[in-house]
Image (tube, rainbow over all chains, first blue to last red; front, top):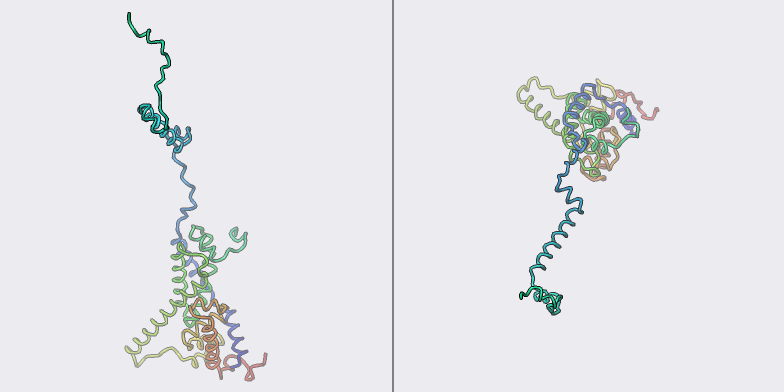
Length: 112
Length: 200
């Protein structure tokens, strides 16, 4: 057989491909729909939960970082309040003299 | 259909849409892939329509199952489908051979194996003759010839489907065509060709 004849025969066969029956297409489509993943990603997202009172208060002062800074400042203030002035000299590097702001007021506290 | 209004999405895009729950994508993939797989399986299985339909449905079933894990860019949907169909057809051909051997053992007196290509050529038309000749080819040659000349695939596509090199594909198709010519030689009259082969 000549190559041309075989090529013609193959080309003719390519044009006459067997077609699927409607029943097969229905079965395949039924499988497709039965196995199709549910569209979870297409569902509307759940609404965010309503924020509580504490959350809103924290938000009002600037959120977590602001609250942390406020807390640190408060603790540092309490510590400073408890420390004696001489201890503070260790931090400041200076000597603290006790100042007498009202040297003449002693008579107010003395009797007689 | 509104789905088609914006142009035809690729098969790979349809896979993503299908995995996301798009029912139109399920329909589009069914309509695109099923006929091609059926035609291919039918040719590999020597025209056994029932088995070819089983192969097509099974191939598509596996496609639906793999869709959620489908990774775009790795392989084409058609390449994947042809590869799965090829393996399913090979399995069925082997099962058919085993069944035939068992039948021969059980009933040797009435054994009537499938008619040889020559016999079928005499009683069939051109397509049946070609089908019979294709059935005589070794599996790999038949797959390569069918994919190249009947399914219209390129050599690189066939290489991807058969998981071999392009040169091996060229060799298989060339040998397959030579074998087909030999099988069909001398049957020009049955095929309707003139002796000189250049009448047209």
